[in-house]
Each structure stands twice: as C-alpha cells, then as structure tokens.
Amino acid sequence: MKHERGFGIDIGGSGIKGAPVDLTTGTLAAERVRIPTPQPSTPEAVAETVGQILDTFGWKSSFGCTFPAVVQHGVTRTAANVDPAWVDCDAATVLRKVTGRDGLLVNDADAAGVAEVAFGAAGSRAGVVLLATLGTGIGSALIVDGHLVPNTEFGHLEIDGHDAETRAADSARDRDDLDWEQWGERLTRYFTHVENLLWPDLIVVGGGVSKKFDKWSPYVRTRTPMVPAKLLNEAGIIGAALLAHG
Image (cartoon, rainbow, N blue to C red; front, side):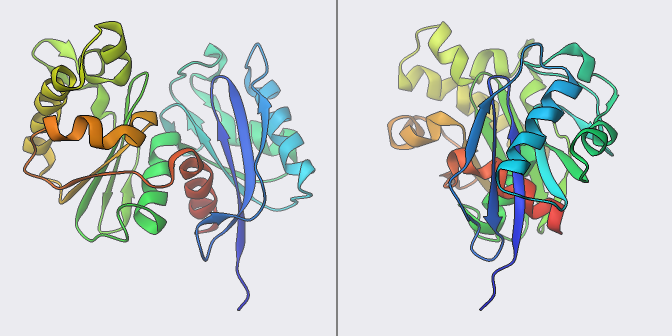
C-alpha cells in the first residue's frame, strides 16, 4: 500500500524542527532535523531556516508550519518568544517568497490537537475534544467532531482575578514550589471553569508534564475523562503536515 507523505515544520522560540510525515500512520517518515531559531528571530530569518530544513530533505512542494501565535489566514497576530516583527505579519507570503513553496501556518497547540485526534490520545473521538498543553503557559486546541476551532486562547481565561496560566501552568508550579497535590488543586479550579464553559467529551493534556501524568492526575478532579497526550514533541510536526495536506 502506498503511503501519502506530507511535511511538517515546528517553529519554537529556541529551535525549528521539521521532517516528512507518513500521513497514513501519523509517524515521522525520517528523523527530524532541528536548527536553532535565528536571533533575532525575524520573519525573514526564520523563513530562511525553514527553507534550509526543507532543502535538507529535498522537499519541493507545500508544507505545514506551526507557530507560537494566533494565526489568522496566514497572518500572525501575536508573537510569543519570537521577534515582535511577527505581530500582524503576512507570514504566509514571507514563507512563500523566501522558501519558494506554499506553507500553511497554524497555531502550535492547534496542530498538536489535530494530531492527537487523528493519531494520538483522542483516537478520532467524536464530540468536543479539548487539548491543553501545560508548560511555560497553557496552550489550547478545540476540536468539534473532527473539525478544528482555531486560535482558542483558554490559557488566558481570567479565573479568580488572575490570568489562568499564571496560576496553573507548569511554570507556575515551579515558580511557587508546589507539590503535585497543591498543583492539582489549581488545575482542578482551572479545568472546572473550562468544563463549565465548553462541556467537552474528552480532555487531552500535553506538554512535558504529560509524561508525569500518573504523579499529578490523581489530584485533579474533573467530570470529563482526562488522558495524557501520546505524540509529545512530534505532535506539532504531524498536525501541521496533516492540515497542510487536507
């Protein structure tokens, strides 16, 4: 059986990673390449690095590309951990001009959510699936019956007078020296609020702390089933390639 392939790029504040993706199995078709994010991380400099990764694999056609920002129709509206020049940048046009290929830009959490629904922990789950990535902040992706609702920012909900991620992200656990039970109480408050807004059928938790799911999840009380993400650091690449192909 012939397996279709796509290509995914994952742009982060410290590194840019990419690889071809087997779209039938949802796995990387070759070992990914990582290049440090250029400094300053202007759109043109980052696009040149993206082009280097594509050239490494001899990839000539369109590709998917994650970005740590709100992305509307190829325009990056925000910029987290990258140069401010990305704000309101027509990034899709910059990518096309610099790389000579069409690139579909997508928020990084959105790409991870799509990958987890297609090939990971959500297992093509019907209904409402929420992916929450717990790291420096809280990223979110909302998928309804397999369709992405892009650019949700549920990490920035105001809860008890605070921006939610400043209290419940993994970075807040480190900053406030919380044990798993104490952090679990904060996560319970956060996820209860989100549940009351969305009534999801499944919550998938991503980010590095998902590897320690068994340590903290017993202290989180939700009415919604909660599972750890499966694809981890490859989710963005896989989701971006899938969205670009679809």
